Image 1 (tube, one colour):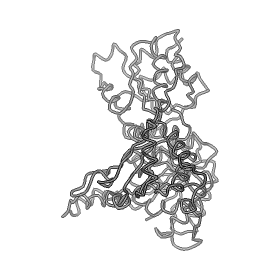
Image 2 (cartoon, helix red, strand yellow):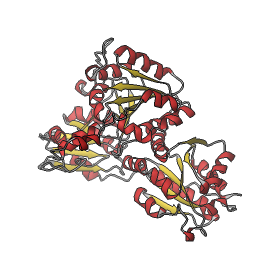
Image 3 (cartoon, rainbow, N blue to C red):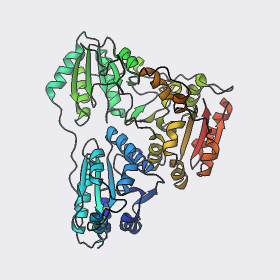
Amino acid sequence: MNSADALLKTLIANGLEVVFANPGTSEMHLVAAIDHHPEVRPVLGLFEGVVTGAADGYARMSGKAAANLLHLGPGFGNGFANTHNAKKARTPMINIVGDHATYHLQYDAPLTSDLDGLAKASSDWVGRSSSPDDLSQLGSEAWQAAHKFPGQIATMLVPADCAWGETENIGPKLEIEGPLKVDDQLIDQAFKSLSSDKNSMLYIGGNFLDEESVTLAGKIASACGCRLATDTFVKRHRRGVGLTKVEPIPYFAELAEEFLSGVESIVFIGTKPPVSFFAYPGKKSFLSPEKAELIEVASAFQDGKYALNALNEMFKGSKIDKHLIPDGKIDMPTSGELNPENLGALFTGLLPEEAIVSDEAATSGFFVTPHAWNAKPLDWLALTGGSIGQGLPLATGAAIASPDRPVICLHGDGGAMYTIQSLWTQARESLNVTNIIFSNRAYAILKVELDRVGALGTGDRASSMFSLDNPEINWVSLAESLGVPAKQTLTVEEFHKAFSYGIKSEGPSLIEIVI
């Protein structure tokens, strides 16, 4: 049996269903193996950042890894940014990276690179095959590593001759490692702190923003009167009308400080104390109040759901106060010019139940996200690692994992250009993704950051590095050239019509909103 076939059989037996790919010569036997196994869905990305980002979105919604098929060090490097984002999200992912044949590496061919170094820099687990006989065992270990709670990046390095050789070995199904235990003494400490007179906060994150977890958090907060919060950007957040509102802290450090001001005790479950995204002159990096008691009950790697259940039992929580539940009131406009003041309410009112939102709206998100709490119940996926260009691929993968749910991508125009090839994959796979591009023709966030870091006295040359208006990007033509129907919308009526069409469509669509 061909060892590439043995690897794929091993991964399928463990649960693999999708391979996102941008392969090259070294991966041809792995490509052929995919053709031999119709149980696996192959999805082509025209850029490796689309591949890794889509695998992240798929895993966030399906709960298990896809496999990425990538070509040597340069191909793996092209996917690095969205691998980084997935690692920060702690998403299960398997990268299968082809390398030169073992005997060919010595000749330093043009595509030879420090592939092992690249893999170690972006992965939680790295394994290199040394023969056809060890490849499928390596596949079992990669699957096990990727699914170690809460999820890891597992990268397999596969020399071409290790894939094309013959073997009789099939890898086993290995036991998956679940969450680590929580220290009960920390739960007791958290209970005492939340029960005290202190101004306290329950801060949850990681894998513990699902419906069960936010409901438990709501019951605890109702019983003890604490505030609820989560990280600025999260892996997957269940939210909407009828669900406990767990509010992300603001992005900007000074606003986050204000948000946390006066809090005397913070209990962390599934995450850690927040820090500023960047260092700024004269501003704090560590955002929790200096004198606050910080109790890290459960890290992202521990059983946060056990901790939430235990706390709720101790508080005998049974109901959730009304002030913690969004009221669902939406003052949705019906006509007029589309602008930042009415866009959020319009978008929220049109969102269907059980939508999946991939949010990389950047500065335009300030117009939308405050309203979105009042949407019908949905899942919200965010840019966890801060490396822009994740939103479109993330939506692509989410749509493959959840074909019966509408997916909406909110994206700034600058970030969208990083992985615009995602539209082609969406069209090719007939995915129901409605892509909303906020076109301010600028890297607007960088304009803000220029002032915040104190880089003053700049002129036209500096400004030109944030501008996207010379030449102006024609989003409608660009999308249509990649097979995606598109509209530019300037009025409420135009957006309503375009969005309604996109949601009901069997394939993708794009809406440009000029900000």
